[in-house]
Length: 162
Image 1 (cartoon, rainbow, N blue to C red):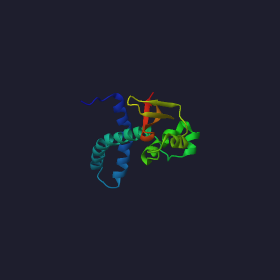
Image 2 (image 1 turned 180 degrees about the vertical axis):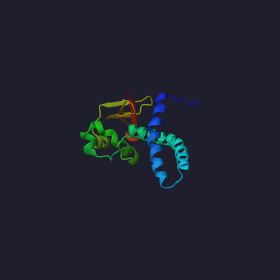
Image 3 (image 1 turned 45 degrees about the vertical axis):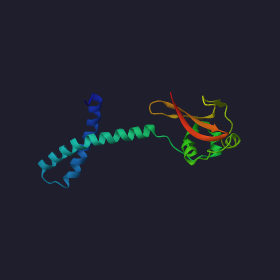
Image 4 (image 1 turned 90 degrees about the horizontal axis):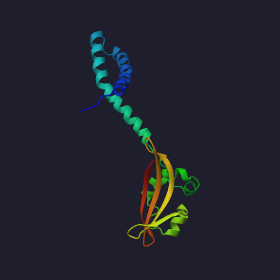
């Protein structure tokens, strides 16, 4: 069952009014008979309003949840800790850290103070990558590097919701 609230109806009305007048103006050139033009305008307004509402909602949420992405740059990584998360996709997809030992990782990303071993005794390093939008809250970003036999084997981006 669809739950229709007064806010939902209000948004539909806000979308429907300009839609009606725009369609009426556009159809004035195509349909000369006034009665046919009004009927067609109403039908198209009723059909288009939910679609336009859906488009507005999709655009709103895509803007709200969009995180910019940048190519990895060693200098930016070290100098701008709060924006590191923007480079995480490039780090993971390019595989630049896979197969590197701890010394090489330190050379590329710098040292980390978050080093621990998991239950299988694998060494894991975690890098703080700042915080970014997470919809209606914030996300704290971490880059996790799992080592096996002193070589990076798994690179993961962790998001911790606020």
